[in-house]
Amino acid sequence: MQLIRYRECPSTTWKNGSGSTKQLLISPSHADLSDFDYRISIASVSSSGPFSLFIGIDRQLCLLEGEGLKLHIQGDSLNSSTLLTPNNAPFNFKDETQIESQLLDDPVLDFNVMTKRDKYSSNIEKICINDTFISDSSENTLDTTQEQNVCMPLQLLLCLEPVIWDQNGHLTELERYDLLLCPPGEPLNFKSDNPTKWLCISLSRNKGTS
Image (cartoon, rainbow, N blue to C red; front, side, top):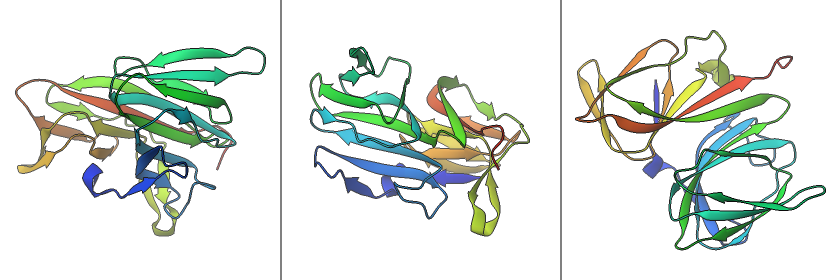
């Protein structure tokens, strides 16, 4: 089991200065923005402007905080726009796409899952957990640290509100946007008076890749 604390992840400023990003997870662990297989991050967007381009990358984007973003999308033959708010489903797009974002009001916080198109795919689902979560017991695993031969289960949980995580009587306070890597088939127990909100992220290796 691995817990990634959002507050402990370093924040880096974008090249254009219009926002900052906290990287929660990247694979391989030594990769940078030019050669990762998948990357999970949370970005603070403080002004309107263009998205960065990543060739060969698919991205899922959802809004965590803020009024919203209007995305102006430049397609091959037809330009379009879409509105992204915290209530919307994740927005999926190819990262070669030219997108201009427009803030509706104050700065926003967004969640990004980026995968190399020919190797991995991802899915983000909003869920509520009463007290126990059991991940898919699929035999497929992702290798996050090849040098240590450590395999990561396919599913991760992003905490959207504070909750107590019970590890066989050892209680850990989870804060908003902490990330849990979930062992396949192993129950995760939580203590809360009401169901808690999460993002469930599934990562899978595409067929035909090694």
